[in-house]
Length: 326
Image (cartoon, rainbow, N blue to C red):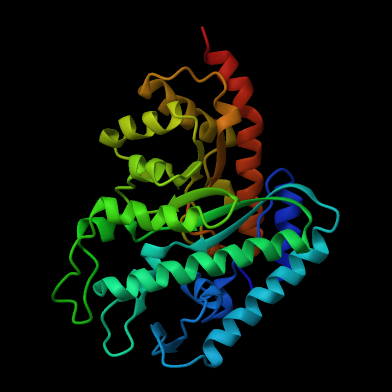
């Protein structure tokens, strides 16, 4: 979400998303509020720090990691106050282990931790433990919440393809075997009883692997799905996984008046189901319509409008499905 005020962001979320609110991330507050920084604040017995704006492993806990933990605590305070008495699904999102390993540097070099399998293993164990504690805290603060845990894995396709750059930028970290990547995801998802889903806003999302890792839902930007990947999505859908589809692209500095109408967003999803050869009946109970990645780059008013547009598209979905069903 855009802005720097967690109370304002939570108010917008609860107002516009009454059926699926979430704990916001406000990266405009700087280091510690970013995706990597929030995950770093949860690491257990692994200190990290920032150097030249980049997160790296450190010898001892320091100010940067404490600041990240304080920012997360403020977000939780705002959510607890605004969601008092809430009963229902409540989503939280944390950087996944592979994207974390690709964005945190080793302590003695500027290479990503991904280049050191031992460091990756330690980060994964630590993150799993920290996320389990985070889920428990959310449940204690919002007792009626059914927690959905979203792992953000934007770097996962690059990790699997061996295209994450080394410090010099002249080389790439070797590709991680899909079985190893699947195991790392599974260990984090299984560390808690929360409903686990994996989000990836990069081309080449490994949908089948996410299913094998134990994800109960997948989230991705619809515009990045290649025609050849629709078979993998069909397999995921037929297995009963939920789908969070990023249907609304929000170009920088664009106004809501230039966005596609809600009916068109809903129709895009129905069209995808038809192309996959899956009857759309029941689609509205399996799919969540969402903005695509980039919401933090809009204005607060734009973010509110984007959430409202997606909610309206979801409201129209059952009606459009019925119209298009023979």
